[in-house]
Image (cartoon, rainbow, N blue to C red; front, side, top):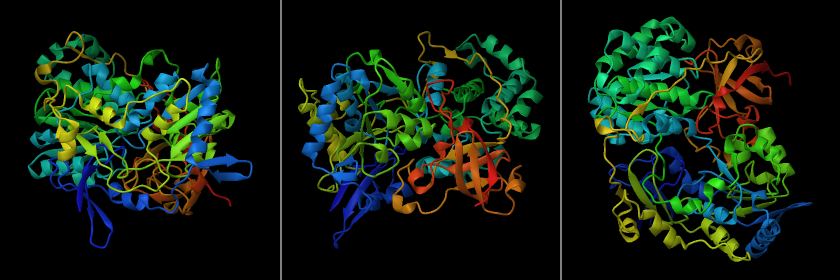
Length: 639
């Protein structure tokens, strides 16, 4: 038997999948060869999904925390308890906080938000992922659009600003590789720590967090050489004011700030000035700094002024909105903007500071928030203070361990949904193709059953209604029946973004950034910038507990200034003002000397948890999390 479904991981590729039932009863998951985007290829993360479903560590029955430990209870008792807690707070609904993220994507996952909107509960805002870069695009272009990702095949050159294509998107990697085979030149800019070497011809190593200075230096060269695009500048508001900002710094000052040599800068200038069309890839990492939005805005400006926006083979690629091709405005409910909101990037601090009313109940779904948000110690204290916490999850991760009630959820392949992508233009039907454990339930089912227990009830549309309304989008031409039959459909959006230099601000003009902020030096005693980068084998903290058996590994440059302090030992403590963590130190040639790389997502309960060391804060735009603003040191372990 062969059934089509789709990946609902928080991954840009959003692959179309095929589940095959073999003669011996086992199941095999494959990339769908009939999908025009997936083309039979899927990543290592998805390949492990069936093992994840069958893990002996999986939570399959509701669990209630008691004085003597965790006790298994039935669904009736669990939902009655939740309903009773909500009833007590119904007159003061902002005392309830709904925390959610993209542990699994899909329309029915998002519909959970409608329950809490109708309840009037407090909500989260901002993002732990891509808010600064996303809003940077909105500030500049008036919206966040890309050329169709397959248009990379028309590029004469590609400049990759920090995207680890080997780990972040297997299909982007394939498109870049194909472009090189056709003759496109590829240049990567990063501090190191990525797997881009097989996908590029040239590499520039940069000081972490300073991409805006390098982009400004190249714009300065374009202006001085008189080879910037006059037509593009004419379609921007107040270009001369921006040019004055650029001229206000010397080339030496700009390159010194990002620690890039004049020779490297000249190579980058030649790319942007002479190779047309040129596509610009922007990684999520370079917007995870205090001025992450500004980093993206200066790169956008460089792409515009080098005449590479609004044309085939060019464009700027950052994350799209996953649900942009679906109609989901109804999920916000009435009065969305008037509801109390907490920044997810400072969630622990904000809960602790909340008054009138204090937070008395937390509901978490799709998020291992204790592990994934910066400022873990504050988040732990916040959870300890709140009276009742419900976590919907399939594993006892760092957040579930701090709950009062854990509700077991279905996972990808076990639940029906419709999903979009933040990379490509296909919307896909994710069919339920594997039976879940008997007691696991979907997020939509949980909220529907809970809502019926309230008086007055909080009723959600049926699952079928949610999916149909979501597909009633001006960007789609399909029905639910058609989507189920085909598995995927492409949106009707144009393949080239901002063609003719028509931007989505009210006046149709582009907006340049108005400031160029200096980068703060490393604080005394903490000389290394901590970069908590993605893993190849797992999405965020969705790592099986049985796969976490040793202390976290970190990587430093052979030229790291702290190498002597830890001696020849591979064991050390990674230390910040917030705490310390035992780690195993390894060397990575090519990494910036002032950097330490940590592959994020491991759990505190298994000896990991990098966000114990990272202070909570906000990026300059979008309410994002400046994870990479944290500095640390290494100390020799004494015991």
